[in-house]
Amino acid sequence: EPDTEVQKIVVGRSEHEYYNAGPTTILQKDSNGLRHSSFEVENSKGSFLLVRDDLLHPHTGGNKLRKLDALLPALQSEGATDILTCGGCQSAHTAAVAVACAERGLKAHVLLRGEPLKVPTGYNLL
Image (tube, rainbow, N blue to C red; front, side):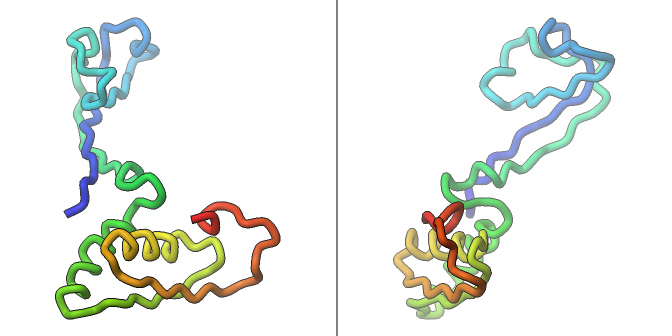
């Protein structure tokens, strides 16, 4: 199961001068900087939970990594040792597959389409 960080977002007014910029304040209640009681929200208009997939992994994240966290163990339980995927030269999907496979001891085979980059950038640096 992925370690997706879930944070509570509260909408209302705050008594703290920095965060009380207008009639409505949006506070991320579960971050370290907002745990002090001076950050409490008065007259809360509601709250919602935010799933922070961008914090799942330092090199790749989001729904791609969550999908692979379910798929790769299922493939391993069936005896898979190699994973084949394809995508574009800057594909976040292919990078996520390569990283997730490497962390699980699987061999990733990535077929890239498109022109080779003259200067590697982004996911090509992984």
